Length: 503
Ligand code: 4AD
Ligand code: MG
Image 1 (cartoon, protein in one colour):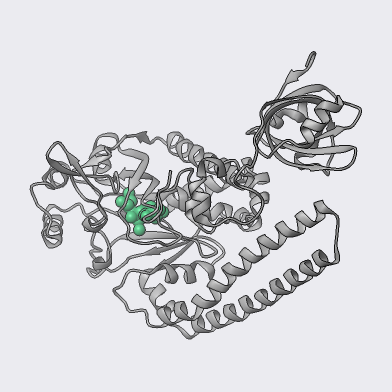
Image 2 (cartoon, rainbow, N blue to C red; image 1 turned 90 degrees about the vertical axis):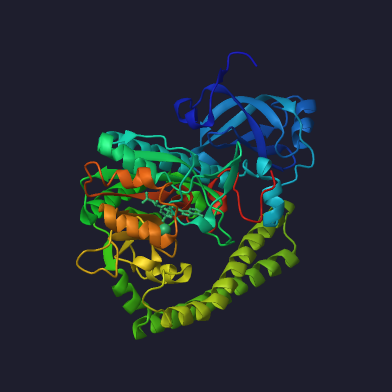
């Protein structure tokens, strides 16, 4: 390997017609009689490397022909631009060196169950889809920091061992802290309120823990949340900030990760519409929508649509199976088999949706003012809208103790949830905070909390209390929405779920 330059796949565009060396892993391979097509990945992308018999030694050709998926190798060759090739460039191989051959890599293109994939998460992270999601997540986090840093916010690192509960005592993880019971943070907000009285505009960003006893596709027990908190702000100000913030994240992802979004099958056209203003509905308006005739009709239409999609999928699978039976070349067989696996998993998802639709329609029709919105209610509202929806002014009983009671209607609080479109549900929760000492004290007593523990939080209402508020955005739910990934467990490298922690 002489006279070649070491490059990353992402930099092939600057090295066309040059001799270069890629260092990576074998992602896939396909062998013709006299030519091998090796797809190599190196952490920056995929590249098809073409090995022709006679252009390398016979010994190397045979070694590469039998090389297993995920073997590590360095490949040297000439870069050629080719639109049909993955990434737009390919390598005409002149030499290669295998570092560590891998045999029987456990994750193959055939379908694997979720438990198997989570047990093998250390390897599954190498799959192209997981890689694409990880790249989008990185951009989301980068955009979050940039947005707040560029808008005059100061980063405050709030503690992970906490003394007080922000979001209800039912979901606290208790920690034995030198003979004292502390808990893992559910939110940095209460500490952030103290910091906002010093710095004005602050944010915290870190891991968050909830002992959620729910196995839904929207819940992790450990997730990442960013929370801004602002002194001297009202509800309208918070909504404006939140819609600017979310639109900025979306624009950064569209700018940086178009290719990944395409691979993931994300709805890019819809994402391009994500610009302020978002829709604004009150909780009471949402309750009316859920119980309306219009919604009942909408749900019935959706059901019919899903059923017709199901028939089409079944037809497609049948056609592919016929092709398979008719006998095609080996590589085509593999391609068809992989396609059938994908379609079957789509079909399984549709079947769940078809089964759930009537239950969700019934829940919506029977929705009663006063309850918190359920996951299915959020889904209904969010699929009815093409842009995110703010739902404001929830009943005070349904929400956290720190939310400010609306002085013009004391049954509701000055809060909002932001629902992402297309059924992804709540990605942000936020509110104006109760800033009156006595009202807050009543709420703390009402919750049955120990006043002494909360005294420092009450103090903030004693020494120069001001109107203030903020919100929290969940990173994994945001990534799930942007990538079109149905389950948020795919949106963090090592997910922690109530019933699944393997590695
Ligand atoms: O609505 P939540 O509970 O709000 C708070 O924690 C406030 N203290 C935030 C604030 O005002 N500073 O959570 C905020 C967001 C949710 O909208 C959701 O995106 C995410 O955090 N989230 C979860 N994500 C994954 N798994 C869970 N179990 C989550 N719980 C909340
Ligand atoms: Mg919430």
